[in-house]
Amino acid sequence: MKITVIGTGYVGLVSGTCFSEMGNKVICVDIDQEKINKLHQGIIPIYEPGLEKMVLKNVEKQNLFFTTKLEEAINESEIVFIAVGTPMGEDGSADLQYVLAVAKEIGQKMNHRLIVVDKSTVPVGTADKVKATIQAELDKRNATLEFDVVSNPEFLKEGDAINDFMKPDRVVIGAESDYAFDKMRQLYTPFTMSHERFIAMDVRSAEMTKYAANAMLATKISFMNEMANICERVGADVNNVRAGIGSDSRIGYSFIYPGAGYGGSCFPKDVKALKKIAEENGYEAKLITSVEEVNNRQKFVIADKIINKFGEDLSGKTFGLWGLAFKPGTDDMREAPAIYVVKELVKRGAKVQAYDPKAMEEAQHFYLKDVENVDYKNAKYEVLDNADALILLTEWKEFRSPDFSEIEKQLKAPVIFDGRNQYTTYGLEEKGFEYYQIGKN
Ligand code: UDX
Image (tube, rainbow, N blue to C red; front, side, top):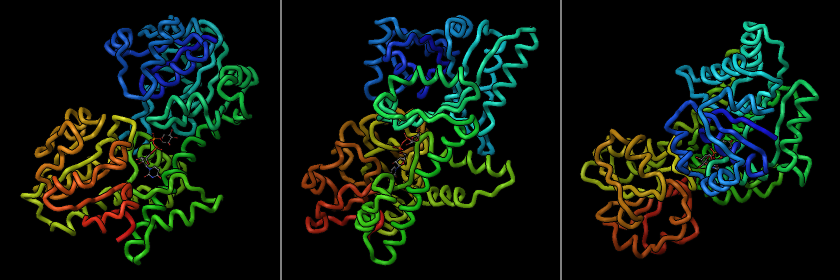
């Protein structure tokens, strides 16, 4: 099939590339000329395992193209995906200006029947707005062209996005016509062949599905973080409690790992947006509000433990930090717990020596740009030099089973704050460490 994907951000680039991998002809469009130039040179703007290789291969096979020319692209395509950003507006709702600007341009430039697919995460009711925007432009130029607007939310996890796209748990399609369902089914058949994973529904339910899925996962995490905080106060061990409840198949083991709070581009933004959607429709979403509040508080739990040990004034103290990205496998630092921890420690006079396998540039040039007293080190053991304690915030594989004798040797005193409960089974106390984790004293 011939497809256009508008927006070469995270979702657009991964989706377009994976569609091309299945033999479709895909044109990726972006208004950012420099980004397109770089893609032409094989420079990928984001880090995602496996993506670069797949892009280069499909460009060479002439299945994947990059351009700034939206009109040419859509008029060669049957299906057009809108995958532009929906940043969080000041009031917490998703800002639709980019989505609607694209819809307007589609309405102005389309010259044959199109299926327009909302791939960006958008509030319930956006497909109707996209439809009205396209129709208004068609009316202005007296064009009578048919089109469908379809909702197809994405469920990609950063760091595993290619795998998630190629082998999805489900593909959710919200549409209004058999024509659109048939075309979308045809497009996704290669990805959903092994099982019946194509779930067809009405447009608003598809839009709502995305928010419900992310809010459910965020709720599991905040719930578990709350359990961890209670465990600490009653003398229980959350690691045991997790195993104890996860074995109940109705609860399950996934997404019940306590930590230093969830981050990333999806959960914080979508939880906020859902709260706002409910509010605008006359409903106070109390549970969702609490999920957010628990998470905001959780981001300070590690800093609180550090303050408990070293006191409110941390001047003269140095902390070694492993992990800046919001999770392993990505350079993304959006809403990462590290931002909050580093700022809090530095504010109290401490110096931080940090290392992350991928997110150092993001931290240095963007998220922690204005924060002084952060020293970025080139290797993991270098952060320990003359440090009062080691803090773990992202569970990268290379931090999972470190050389503890090396850590002990280099730190001023053997103290570890583990924000991901990675070292619970290493018997660190017996090895002479002072070991602080989440949900166990
Ligand atoms: C998430 C959803 O999983 C994905 O389906 C959606 O499309 C986008 O949002 P992503 O943000 O890439 O994906 O990361 P994910 O692996 O889900 O982790 C999100 C955050 O939750 C991370 O900060 C992670 O550390 C945290 N987390 C996850 C926990 O604290 N505990 C857990 O048990 C699981």
